Image (cartoon, rainbow, N blue to C red; front, side, top):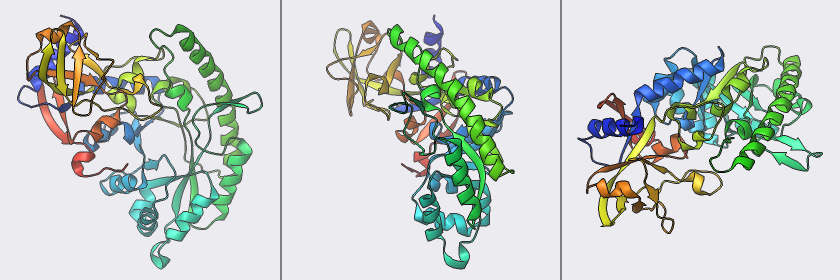
Length: 402
Protein backbone atom coordinates (compact mmCIF):
# COMPACT_ATOMS: atom_id res chain seq x y z
CA UNK A 1 0.00 0.00 0.00
CA UNK A 2 1.37 3.42 -0.96
CA UNK A 3 1.55 6.24 1.56
CA UNK A 4 -1.30 8.00 -0.23
CA UNK A 5 -3.42 4.88 -0.21
CA UNK A 6 -2.76 4.54 3.51
CA UNK A 7 -3.86 8.13 4.03
CA UNK A 8 -7.03 7.47 2.08
CA UNK A 9 -7.81 4.47 4.27
CA UNK A 10 -7.24 6.56 7.41
CA UNK A 11 -9.41 9.44 6.21
CA UNK A 12 -12.19 7.09 5.14
CA UNK A 13 -12.14 5.37 8.54
CA UNK A 14 -12.00 8.68 10.41
CA UNK A 15 -14.99 10.11 8.55
CA UNK A 16 -17.04 6.94 8.11
CA UNK A 17 -19.72 8.45 10.35
CA UNK A 18 -19.83 11.69 8.34
CA UNK A 19 -21.65 12.27 5.08
CA UNK A 20 -19.77 14.11 2.35
CA UNK A 21 -19.24 16.85 1.34
CA UNK A 22 -16.85 17.14 4.25
CA UNK A 23 -13.55 18.94 4.92
CA UNK A 24 -10.72 17.75 7.13
CA UNK A 25 -7.35 18.87 8.42
CA UNK A 26 -4.80 16.16 9.18
CA UNK A 27 -3.22 17.47 12.40
CA UNK A 28 -0.05 15.40 12.07
CA UNK A 29 0.57 16.92 8.64
CA UNK A 30 -0.42 20.41 9.87
CA UNK A 31 2.05 20.23 12.76
CA UNK A 32 4.82 18.81 10.57
CA UNK A 33 4.31 21.66 8.10
CA UNK A 34 4.42 24.17 10.96
CA UNK A 35 7.71 22.70 12.15
CA UNK A 36 9.14 22.93 8.65
CA UNK A 37 8.17 26.61 8.36
CA UNK A 38 9.90 27.32 11.67
CA UNK A 39 13.00 25.45 10.54
CA UNK A 40 13.16 27.43 7.31
CA UNK A 41 12.63 30.72 9.14
CA UNK A 42 15.90 30.19 10.98
CA UNK A 43 14.88 31.77 14.27
CA UNK A 44 12.80 34.64 12.92
CA UNK A 45 9.15 34.63 14.05
CA UNK A 46 6.45 33.66 11.59
CA UNK A 47 3.33 35.80 11.40
CA UNK A 48 0.41 33.58 10.36
CA UNK A 49 -1.50 34.75 7.27
CA UNK A 50 -5.12 34.30 8.33
CA UNK A 51 -6.49 34.28 4.78
CA UNK A 52 -4.67 30.99 4.29
CA UNK A 53 -6.20 29.40 7.40
CA UNK A 54 -9.65 31.01 8.02
CA UNK A 55 -10.27 29.06 11.18
CA UNK A 56 -9.70 30.56 14.63
CA UNK A 57 -8.95 27.22 16.28
CA UNK A 58 -6.16 26.48 13.80
CA UNK A 59 -4.77 30.01 14.02
CA UNK A 60 -4.56 29.46 17.76
CA UNK A 61 -2.93 26.05 17.26
CA UNK A 62 -0.20 27.55 15.07
CA UNK A 63 0.41 30.50 17.41
CA UNK A 64 0.74 28.18 20.39
CA UNK A 65 3.86 26.69 18.77
CA UNK A 66 7.35 28.12 19.27
CA UNK A 67 8.40 30.19 16.28
CA UNK A 68 5.01 31.74 15.51
CA UNK A 69 3.94 35.23 16.62
CA UNK A 70 1.09 37.42 15.44
CA UNK A 71 -1.52 37.27 12.71
CA UNK A 72 -1.58 38.87 9.27
CA UNK A 73 -5.25 39.55 8.50
CA UNK A 74 -6.98 40.40 5.24
CA UNK A 75 -9.82 42.81 6.12
CA UNK A 76 -10.32 45.43 8.80
CA UNK A 77 -13.55 43.79 9.98
CA UNK A 78 -11.68 40.52 10.43
CA UNK A 79 -8.86 42.31 12.26
CA UNK A 80 -11.27 43.86 14.77
CA UNK A 81 -13.05 40.53 15.28
CA UNK A 82 -9.78 38.72 15.93
CA UNK A 83 -8.63 41.43 18.32
CA UNK A 84 -11.90 41.19 20.26
CA UNK A 85 -11.42 37.41 20.34
CA UNK A 86 -8.10 37.73 22.15
CA UNK A 87 -5.52 37.95 19.35
CA UNK A 88 -3.18 40.68 20.57
CA UNK A 89 -1.04 41.35 17.48
CA UNK A 90 -2.95 41.67 14.20
CA UNK A 91 -1.37 43.21 11.11
CA UNK A 92 -3.89 44.12 8.41
CA UNK A 93 -2.08 43.24 5.19
CA UNK A 94 -4.17 45.37 2.82
CA UNK A 95 -5.42 48.98 2.88
CA UNK A 96 -9.07 49.33 3.86
CA UNK A 97 -11.94 51.67 2.99
CA UNK A 98 -14.08 50.43 5.88
CA UNK A 99 -15.14 53.70 7.53
CA UNK A 100 -17.28 52.00 10.16
CA UNK A 101 -14.35 49.78 11.05
CA UNK A 102 -12.02 52.76 11.37
CA UNK A 103 -14.54 54.48 13.64
CA UNK A 104 -14.46 51.41 15.92
CA UNK A 105 -10.68 51.16 15.79
CA UNK A 106 -10.06 54.78 16.71
CA UNK A 107 -12.56 54.72 19.57
CA UNK A 108 -11.35 51.59 21.38
CA UNK A 109 -7.94 51.52 23.10
CA UNK A 110 -7.83 47.70 23.13
CA UNK A 111 -8.43 47.49 19.38
CA UNK A 112 -6.05 50.35 18.61
CA UNK A 113 -3.24 48.65 20.53
CA UNK A 114 -3.81 45.24 18.91
CA UNK A 115 -4.39 46.15 15.25
CA UNK A 116 -1.91 47.67 12.80
CA UNK A 117 -3.31 49.00 9.52
CA UNK A 118 -1.64 49.06 6.10
CA UNK A 119 -0.96 52.36 4.35
CA UNK A 120 0.71 53.29 1.09
CA UNK A 121 -0.99 56.65 0.38
CA UNK A 122 -1.79 59.78 2.41
CA UNK A 123 -5.38 59.53 1.16
CA UNK A 124 -5.78 56.42 3.31
CA UNK A 125 -4.90 58.49 6.37
CA UNK A 126 -7.56 60.99 5.34
CA UNK A 127 -10.10 58.17 5.29
CA UNK A 128 -9.18 57.16 8.83
CA UNK A 129 -9.40 60.73 10.10
CA UNK A 130 -12.77 61.23 8.43
CA UNK A 131 -14.06 58.17 10.29
CA UNK A 132 -12.96 59.38 13.72
CA UNK A 133 -16.01 60.00 15.86
CA UNK A 134 -15.28 63.28 17.60
CA UNK A 135 -13.96 62.91 21.14
CA UNK A 136 -14.55 59.16 21.00
CA UNK A 137 -12.19 58.50 18.09
CA UNK A 138 -8.86 59.85 19.27
CA UNK A 139 -6.88 56.64 19.69
CA UNK A 140 -3.50 56.56 17.94
CA UNK A 141 -3.60 54.27 14.91
CA UNK A 142 -0.66 51.93 14.37
CA UNK A 143 0.52 52.11 10.76
CA UNK A 144 2.56 49.76 8.57
CA UNK A 145 3.97 51.04 5.28
CA UNK A 146 3.90 48.69 2.29
CA UNK A 147 6.79 48.54 -0.14
CA UNK A 148 6.20 47.48 -3.74
CA UNK A 149 8.45 44.47 -4.28
CA UNK A 150 8.04 44.08 -8.04
CA UNK A 151 11.10 43.67 -10.19
CA UNK A 152 11.32 46.42 -12.81
CA UNK A 153 13.46 45.80 -15.87
CA UNK A 154 14.49 47.82 -18.92
CA UNK A 155 13.91 51.16 -17.29
CA UNK A 156 10.57 50.11 -15.85
CA UNK A 157 9.09 49.02 -19.18
CA UNK A 158 8.85 45.44 -17.90
CA UNK A 159 7.39 44.68 -14.48
CA UNK A 160 7.45 41.31 -12.72
CA UNK A 161 5.27 41.01 -9.64
CA UNK A 162 1.88 41.94 -8.27
CA UNK A 163 0.51 45.45 -8.64
CA UNK A 164 0.27 46.43 -4.98
CA UNK A 165 1.83 49.48 -3.35
CA UNK A 166 2.83 52.59 -5.35
CA UNK A 167 5.89 52.95 -3.08
CA UNK A 168 8.89 51.45 -4.83
CA UNK A 169 11.97 53.42 -3.83
CA UNK A 170 13.51 54.13 -0.42
CA UNK A 171 12.80 57.83 -0.87
CA UNK A 172 9.10 57.21 -1.57
CA UNK A 173 8.64 55.06 1.52
CA UNK A 174 10.59 57.49 3.70
CA UNK A 175 8.49 60.41 2.42
CA UNK A 176 5.30 58.66 3.48
CA UNK A 177 6.88 57.80 6.84
CA UNK A 178 7.54 61.51 7.36
CA UNK A 179 3.97 62.38 6.38
CA UNK A 180 2.62 59.89 8.89
CA UNK A 181 5.03 61.03 11.62
CA UNK A 182 3.90 64.65 11.20
CA UNK A 183 0.25 63.73 11.44
CA UNK A 184 -1.41 63.56 14.87
CA UNK A 185 -3.17 60.31 15.68
CA UNK A 186 -0.87 57.98 13.72
CA UNK A 187 2.33 56.07 14.46
CA UNK A 188 4.53 54.19 12.00
CA UNK A 189 5.45 50.86 13.57
CA UNK A 190 6.33 48.60 10.64
CA UNK A 191 7.18 47.96 7.01
CA UNK A 192 5.77 45.14 4.91
CA UNK A 193 7.11 43.88 1.60
CA UNK A 194 5.47 40.78 0.09
CA UNK A 195 7.42 39.29 -2.80
CA UNK A 196 4.58 37.31 -4.33
CA UNK A 197 6.48 36.68 -7.56
CA UNK A 198 9.01 34.73 -5.46
CA UNK A 199 6.90 33.35 -2.61
CA UNK A 200 3.79 32.52 -4.61
CA UNK A 201 5.01 31.26 -8.00
CA UNK A 202 6.13 27.67 -8.41
CA UNK A 203 9.51 27.13 -10.03
CA UNK A 204 9.19 23.43 -10.91
CA UNK A 205 6.01 23.03 -12.94
CA UNK A 206 5.58 19.46 -14.17
CA UNK A 207 5.97 19.15 -17.93
CA UNK A 208 7.21 22.73 -18.37
CA UNK A 209 11.00 22.63 -17.90
CA UNK A 210 11.73 25.77 -19.95
CA UNK A 211 9.20 27.87 -18.08
CA UNK A 212 10.41 26.48 -14.76
CA UNK A 213 14.00 27.39 -15.57
CA UNK A 214 12.92 30.90 -16.55
CA UNK A 215 11.00 31.29 -13.27
CA UNK A 216 14.06 30.21 -11.26
CA UNK A 217 16.26 32.73 -13.06
CA UNK A 218 13.68 35.49 -12.55
CA UNK A 219 13.30 34.68 -8.87
CA UNK A 220 17.03 34.65 -8.25
CA UNK A 221 17.34 38.09 -9.85
CA UNK A 222 14.30 39.37 -7.96
CA UNK A 223 15.65 38.15 -4.62
CA UNK A 224 18.99 39.92 -5.17
CA UNK A 225 17.39 43.18 -6.24
CA UNK A 226 14.81 43.20 -3.46
CA UNK A 227 17.28 42.34 -0.71
CA UNK A 228 19.34 45.42 -1.58
CA UNK A 229 16.33 47.70 -1.99
CA UNK A 230 14.53 46.44 1.11
CA UNK A 231 17.63 47.08 3.23
CA UNK A 232 17.88 50.60 1.81
CA UNK A 233 14.17 51.20 2.52
CA UNK A 234 14.57 50.08 6.13
CA UNK A 235 17.58 52.39 6.62
CA UNK A 236 15.66 55.31 5.13
CA UNK A 237 12.58 54.73 7.28
CA UNK A 238 14.58 54.14 10.47
CA UNK A 239 16.16 57.57 9.91
CA UNK A 240 12.62 58.96 10.24
CA UNK A 241 11.22 56.41 12.73
CA UNK A 242 14.05 55.07 14.91
CA UNK A 243 11.61 52.98 16.94
CA UNK A 244 10.36 50.89 14.03
CA UNK A 245 9.01 47.66 15.54
CA UNK A 246 9.06 45.19 12.65
CA UNK A 247 9.90 44.57 9.02
CA UNK A 248 7.70 41.85 7.53
CA UNK A 249 8.46 39.95 4.35
CA UNK A 250 8.18 36.71 2.52
CA UNK A 251 5.60 33.99 2.14
CA UNK A 252 5.45 30.21 2.22
CA UNK A 253 7.49 29.81 -0.95
CA UNK A 254 10.33 32.13 0.09
CA UNK A 255 10.66 31.68 3.86
CA UNK A 256 14.32 30.71 4.03
CA UNK A 257 15.41 33.26 1.43
CA UNK A 258 13.60 36.17 3.05
CA UNK A 259 14.66 35.14 6.55
CA UNK A 260 18.29 35.36 5.44
CA UNK A 261 17.98 39.14 4.97
CA UNK A 262 19.25 41.09 7.97
CA UNK A 263 16.71 43.87 7.34
CA UNK A 264 13.73 41.51 7.79
CA UNK A 265 12.60 40.85 11.37
CA UNK A 266 9.63 38.52 10.76
CA UNK A 267 8.22 36.27 8.04
CA UNK A 268 4.63 35.95 6.85
CA UNK A 269 3.31 32.49 5.98
CA UNK A 270 0.06 30.59 6.13
CA UNK A 271 -0.50 28.41 3.08
CA UNK A 272 2.41 26.23 4.14
CA UNK A 273 0.32 24.94 7.03
CA UNK A 274 -2.31 23.40 4.71
CA UNK A 275 -0.07 22.87 1.62
CA UNK A 276 -2.62 23.21 -1.20
CA UNK A 277 -1.88 21.94 -4.69
CA UNK A 278 -0.22 25.17 -5.92
CA UNK A 279 2.68 24.40 -3.59
CA UNK A 280 3.52 21.14 -5.32
CA UNK A 281 5.62 23.06 -7.85
CA UNK A 282 8.48 24.34 -5.68
CA UNK A 283 12.11 23.29 -5.43
CA UNK A 284 12.67 25.27 -2.22
CA UNK A 285 10.53 23.08 0.03
CA UNK A 286 8.06 20.23 0.15
CA UNK A 287 5.19 19.83 2.58
CA UNK A 288 2.44 17.39 3.43
CA UNK A 289 -1.10 18.03 2.22
CA UNK A 290 -3.01 18.73 5.43
CA UNK A 291 -6.34 20.19 4.30
CA UNK A 292 -8.62 18.12 2.05
CA UNK A 293 -12.27 17.88 1.18
CA UNK A 294 -14.35 14.91 0.09
CA UNK A 295 -17.28 14.70 -2.31
CA UNK A 296 -19.60 11.68 -2.43
CA UNK A 297 -19.99 9.39 -5.41
CA UNK A 298 -23.60 9.74 -6.55
CA UNK A 299 -23.54 8.15 -10.03
CA UNK A 300 -21.70 5.49 -12.03
CA UNK A 301 -22.41 6.49 -15.65
CA UNK A 302 -20.26 3.79 -17.20
CA UNK A 303 -16.99 1.90 -17.14
CA UNK A 304 -14.15 4.05 -15.81
CA UNK A 305 -16.48 6.89 -14.79
CA UNK A 306 -18.03 8.07 -11.55
CA UNK A 307 -19.86 11.28 -10.78
CA UNK A 308 -19.44 13.08 -7.48
CA UNK A 309 -21.67 15.77 -6.03
CA UNK A 310 -20.40 19.34 -6.49
CA UNK A 311 -16.70 20.06 -6.45
CA UNK A 312 -16.54 23.18 -8.62
CA UNK A 313 -14.47 25.23 -6.17
CA UNK A 314 -12.05 27.29 -8.27
CA UNK A 315 -9.40 29.42 -6.59
CA UNK A 316 -8.80 33.12 -7.09
CA UNK A 317 -6.18 34.43 -9.51
CA UNK A 318 -5.78 34.34 -13.26
CA UNK A 319 -8.17 31.64 -14.57
CA UNK A 320 -6.55 28.40 -15.64
CA UNK A 321 -6.35 24.68 -14.89
CA UNK A 322 -3.99 25.35 -11.99
CA UNK A 323 -6.81 27.16 -10.16
CA UNK A 324 -8.96 24.03 -9.98
CA UNK A 325 -9.08 21.52 -7.14
CA UNK A 326 -7.34 18.28 -7.97
CA UNK A 327 -8.79 14.77 -7.38
CA UNK A 328 -6.30 13.33 -4.91
CA UNK A 329 -7.57 10.06 -3.40
CA UNK A 330 -7.94 7.45 -4.74
CA UNK A 331 -4.97 8.07 -6.99
CA UNK A 332 -5.50 8.10 -10.73
CA UNK A 333 -8.76 9.98 -11.15
CA UNK A 334 -8.99 12.95 -13.51
CA UNK A 335 -11.57 15.40 -14.79
CA UNK A 336 -13.53 14.94 -17.98
CA UNK A 337 -11.97 17.67 -20.15
CA UNK A 338 -15.37 18.49 -21.63
CA UNK A 339 -16.90 19.20 -18.21
CA UNK A 340 -14.28 19.82 -15.52
CA UNK A 341 -15.42 20.33 -11.92
CA UNK A 342 -19.06 21.33 -11.87
CA UNK A 343 -21.29 23.47 -9.71
CA UNK A 344 -23.50 20.53 -8.68
CA UNK A 345 -21.81 17.46 -10.16
CA UNK A 346 -18.38 16.43 -11.38
CA UNK A 347 -17.65 13.38 -13.55
CA UNK A 348 -14.30 11.75 -12.87
CA UNK A 349 -12.47 9.42 -15.23
CA UNK A 350 -9.92 6.68 -14.63
CA UNK A 351 -9.65 3.03 -13.73
CA UNK A 352 -10.04 3.68 -9.95
CA UNK A 353 -13.63 4.72 -10.71
CA UNK A 354 -14.57 1.08 -11.22
CA UNK A 355 -13.76 0.31 -7.58
CA UNK A 356 -15.89 3.14 -6.19
CA UNK A 357 -19.43 2.55 -4.99
CA UNK A 358 -22.33 4.94 -4.60
CA UNK A 359 -21.73 6.84 -1.36
CA UNK A 360 -17.93 6.40 -1.34
CA UNK A 361 -15.80 9.49 -0.81
CA UNK A 362 -13.39 11.01 -3.32
CA UNK A 363 -10.82 13.28 -1.67
CA UNK A 364 -9.68 16.53 -3.30
CA UNK A 365 -7.04 19.16 -2.64
CA UNK A 366 -7.96 22.80 -3.22
CA UNK A 367 -5.67 24.87 -5.41
CA UNK A 368 -5.19 27.44 -2.64
CA UNK A 369 -5.30 27.20 1.13
CA UNK A 370 -7.88 29.14 3.11
CA UNK A 371 -10.34 29.57 0.26
CA UNK A 372 -11.46 26.01 0.95
CA UNK A 373 -12.99 27.30 4.19
CA UNK A 374 -15.38 29.56 2.30
CA UNK A 375 -17.10 26.35 1.13
CA UNK A 376 -17.39 24.57 4.47
CA UNK A 377 -18.81 25.51 7.85
CA UNK A 378 -16.54 23.17 9.76
CA UNK A 379 -13.20 21.40 9.64
CA UNK A 380 -12.96 17.92 11.12
CA UNK A 381 -9.55 17.48 12.73
CA UNK A 382 -8.06 14.05 12.10
CA UNK A 383 -5.46 12.37 14.28
CA UNK A 384 -4.48 8.88 13.17
CA UNK A 385 -7.67 7.31 11.90
CA UNK A 386 -10.13 9.26 14.06
CA UNK A 387 -11.76 12.67 14.10
CA UNK A 388 -10.74 14.12 17.46
CA UNK A 389 -12.42 17.53 17.17
CA UNK A 390 -14.65 19.54 14.88
CA UNK A 391 -14.04 23.28 14.69
CA UNK A 392 -15.86 26.05 12.82
CA UNK A 393 -14.33 27.88 9.91
CA UNK A 394 -14.86 31.63 9.57
CA UNK A 395 -17.93 30.78 7.53
CA UNK A 396 -19.14 28.48 10.29
CA UNK A 397 -18.94 31.39 12.70
CA UNK A 398 -20.98 33.53 10.34
CA UNK A 399 -17.94 35.56 9.27
CA UNK A 400 -17.67 35.95 5.50
CA UNK A 401 -15.38 38.95 5.26
CA UNK A 402 -14.88 38.87 1.48
